[in-house]
Amino acid sequence: MADAVIIDAVRTPGGKRNGKLRNWHAADLASEPLKALVERNDLDPGLVDDVIMGCVMQVAEQALNVGRSAVLAAGFPESVPATTIDRQCGSSQQSLHFAAQGIMAGAYDVVIGGGVEVMSRTPMGASVVRDLGYPFGPRTFGRYEDRGGLVSQGEGAELICEQWGLTRDDLDAFAVSSHQKAAQATAEGRFEREIIAVAVKDDDRNDTDERMTADEGIRPDSSVETLGNLKPAFRPENGNITAGNSSQITDGASGVLVMSETKANQLGLTPRARFHAFAVTGSDPITMLTGPIPATKMVLERGGLTMDDIDIFEINEAFASVPLAWAKELDADMSKVNVNGGAIALGHPLGASGAKLMATLLNELERTGGRYGLLTMCEGGGMANATIIERLG
Image 1 (cartoon, rainbow, N blue to C red):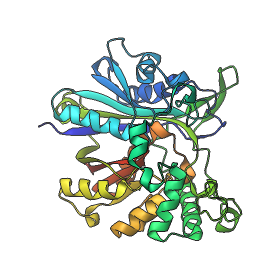
Image 2 (image 1 turned 45 degrees about the horizontal axis):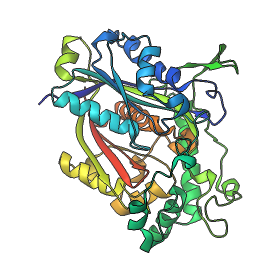
Image 3 (image 1 turned 120 degrees about the vertical axis):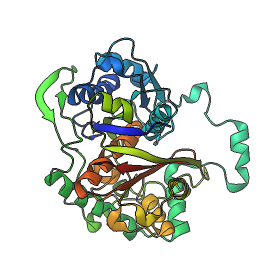
Image 4 (image 1 turned 60 degrees about the vertical axis):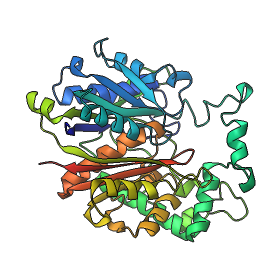
């Protein structure tokens, strides 16, 4: 079986809602990582066997297979196909799994896995057209009636606080740490190799002279005191989850160039990491966000590793309660977790986040000389992906 290796991984900066990326069309923004990957590696785009794009709100400007539109927008040959997939927040992490697994199975030699979400223009929930019917049918609803029915992700995050004994101060302190670590990482240039500069467009969607080179949502002056003034978002009377300890609504795109090791050698390209193990699992769709716990256990078992063997963890910060509960359950060393901040500070562009975090994980392993990195994230409906990569070289 062929080894699937990572040649390169890039992302756009994270644009805050209605911020500097608000005027980008999703297909065009998704084309930026595609172009960067082939240009940075002097790769003939005609060699790409497939592009697998994650996107959650596949409606309006993100509809009709935005991955294919991105391939054409990038100027790739028309012979290069693409598909768009939805595994909720883990969509582009799943795109990397499909890319690597296709290579390992011998179906591909060269694949780009990535994702996009322009949430300023296609907001969360946009794909639910209530007049045409609700996405959960009577049988799905009926299955959970005796537990009060299905709830929002925010309520799921509150239930996690209850189950693991997490307080508002715990969540706000974690959020502040995320901003502080992200600010330090930015100041030290830790994201420079993964972030590709993109033009800021005016309201007519024309490029301006301004180039966006850094994540827009970092608030280095955040404090537990200021976050403590925010009102709960989902339980007005006694909630813990606020806008300040939740992931930011963000615009962004990402891409990872994956090859067989044989093909990389033929092309004279140096693999930076290899895929070591994969896992995907379902979890309780009411608490919904606990999937990273069993997914982590599963991927470690499949990879023949323990928590102590992992040098860097990237756990998506959908809500602060998610990584905190994960860490409590698995007795994680927090000095290895989200060391450059996470989605609370850097943003969560839904369909792009998995490949975005993979770029960060890869670069941090190289910066620190670590061997193994583990990426996992919770997903709507009660699921989670987990991936272990091994740094090469």
